[in-house]
Amino acid sequence: MSRIPPQAVLGLLIIAAGLLLTADNLGVYDADRILRFWPLGIVIVGLTKLLQSAAGSGRAVGAAIMFVGAVLTADISFGVPRIEDYWPLGLIVLGLVILVRTIRPAPARQAVPAPPPGEFASGIPGGRGASGYGPDAGVAAGMAPDEGPVQVTYDESVSEVAVWAGKQRRVASPAFRRGDLTAVMGGVELDLRAAATANGDALIDVFVMWGGIEIWVPPDWVVVNKVNVLMGGVEDKSTGTRDARHRLTVRGFVVMGGLEIKT
Image (cartoon, rainbow, N blue to C red):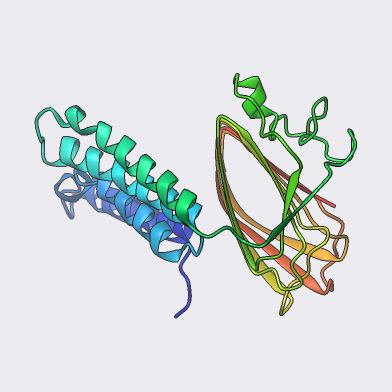
């Protein structure tokens, strides 16, 4: 079954809202009868993210979006009293996600020395990408960066979540297929320059809010940008051409943050 990305679901919901408002303005239908349940749209987007994500972080983001939508639905649509008393349930969900990620078997990886300053514009102290965001964003927010060498993985998929922190990951898989990157008030740097795709195609889902993500790709990779941006920026500096052997599709959301892709 083909995957339906969350941004496509969001687009369909916006189209439906536009049709309802048009019908309301023309006196054909009272849109308030349906639009008062608008927070359910957030639940649907989160559910889509949860079901379509192959990696743990994507599912965690989907669950978080669903939780926010459910709280808003109960408060706005159904008038549940004192719904704010249930916000600590979000901490329980976050704790469960951290617990699962802790006890899950670690992927095959190899520790290598970090590159010299300047090689990774935002991942090394003193450097920063053109977008103004990156893994150092976590340092700027008062959080200590991850210690130790950069991690190298040979898995076909990667998952990284950075909240008030910076994460770096190198991928050397000869059959890279999928990635799921989340940066909230922090930054993620993913280096794919030593990787290749199994069948010529790879996909990365991103979610950025008040932070940044940097993705490094080999020079023979072409990047297809399907990212939705709200008060943020996406900059593609990759050098791949249309007839490149490998194609990387990047999709997702950037809200008040930055995404930079480069070779």
